[in-house]
Length: 174
Image 1 (cartoon, one colour):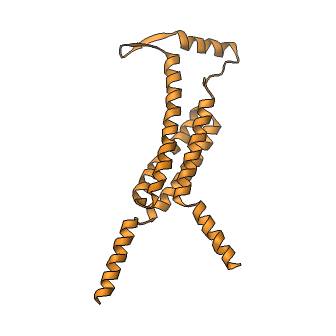
Image 2 (cartoon, one colour):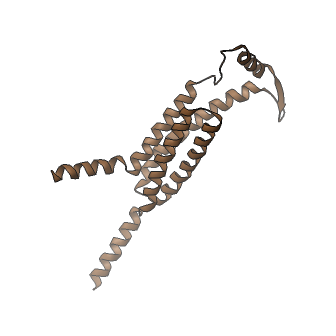
Image 3 (cartoon, helix red, strand yellow):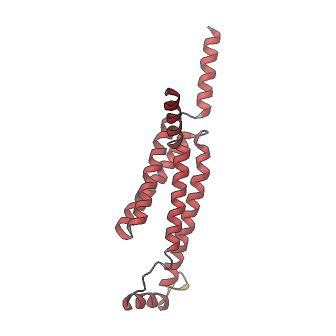
C-alpha cells in the first residue's frame, strides 16, 4: 500500500511540476489563440445597424503617418496580429519550460512576468470583451503563477552541484 502512495505522490509531483504547468499554459494559450482566430471577422452582422457599422469601417478612409487606411484594415490587422502574438507566446512558453532545471530562478521571474501580463489580459477581457478569454487568461495566470512560485523556491542545478562539491571538499579536508 505504501508503494502505491509513493507512486501517487510521484505522479502528483510530476503533474504539478513547473515544466508540466508551463507546458499546460502553453496549450491553453494555443486554445485561446484558436478561439480568438475562429471568431473572425470579430464582428456581429446580425442587425442592420451592425452591418452599417462594419460597412462604414470598411469605407471610411483616413491618413495616418502618410498612409491611407480604413478603420476596418486596422481592426482586421490587429485581430490577426493578436493571433500571431498568442501563437508566439505559446511557442515561447513551451520552449522555456526546458530551462526549469538549468535556471529555475530566472525562469521563475520570466514566468511571473508572463503571469502578470495574463492577469492584465484577464482584466481587459472581462472589462471590454467576453467571458471565454477572461477564463482562459485567468487560468493561464494562476497556472504560471504556481509555476513561478515553485521555480523561485528552487536552486539552480549548478548551485546545487557547487554546494555539494563544497560540502564534499570540506569533509574531505577534515
